[in-house]
Amino acid sequence: MLKQTIESVYQTLVKRRGEPVLSVEKQTEICTAAKRVRCVDYVASWDITNGTGRAETVVTRANWRFILTGITVFSQYIPEAAGAFPDFVFNFQNLPFTGSFLNVTDPALLNTVWSKLAIGGQDNGVHFEESRNVLFVLPERAIIETVLKPHIMWGGSTYPNNRGAILYTGVEIQMR
Amino acid sequence: MTTQSEITAKVLNAQNTQRYEKALDLVRSFTAKANTAESVTIPITNEGPFILEGYNIAFTKNSTTTPDGGSAKAACFTKLKFKSQAAGNAMSSDFVPVQLIATPGADDSPRYGSRPFYYYFPMGDALIIEYDNRAPAALNGETNVSNDERIEICFTGKVYPLNA
Image: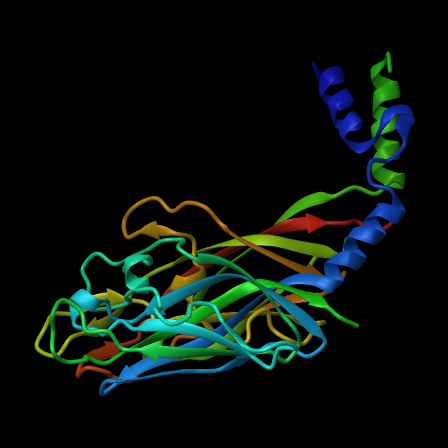
């Protein structure tokens, strides 16, 4: 039993004839690549005050290309707890080509996609791993602008105040 | 390999002379003090470079938010930011609400999954956890009170020992 265990451990470390599975060159290659490709989160805060929506603008880092892979929205209040939940339009600027929108003239009603993410005003608030998957390649110094359109929920007539954060997550690759 | 001594010799040789990936968990539990913004540091092993592959975060909800005329609800106002001491810049552009990056799960139910996040730490580096646990200003006439929160984080990844 012991012999079999040791032998299986050894086989994990080496190929046939005892050559290392992970050579010095391969390890160097892995670590070199890991310095140039890494995950990153860009965070933008948003708020709706007196019916007017506003969100921070995010700018991608110099010398790094950003591959946006997911967007997650956090809201302090959920609509049922009298918080306005906006529609979002994501606009990318300062691109080498004409700026483009992630969602265009009819922005998705995102609260039907994301679950209740409130930190207050709710008895059973839950947090789910509900990041909307996207794929968009952005150059260095690209501008991610978020346009908010407050949405009246459940037939109400007013825009209760609300605020939260947007997480743009993805991979950044060093350009030089 | 036919004898135990031969096997032992070969395994020791692999350990001493050859490179291998070694899984490593860096775990840190700390108290995010009420209405405070501070940082805690985790030294990275000196065995070799560490490549972070993901993390799990659990947090308490000891703070409260009380709607105007309503009853207090449990809340957590803690925001986090991680950075490599060697790189200088952070893994996020700003503080992130812990709810956005914590291990998914409902209150009082098992938590599941982890968040993939790849990042390189050179040998001897340190992982800095910055937190901001200040209560936000009132928005709809509610009262937000920040209390101490217990944050538990497990960073998981691989170490590449040098001169192993």
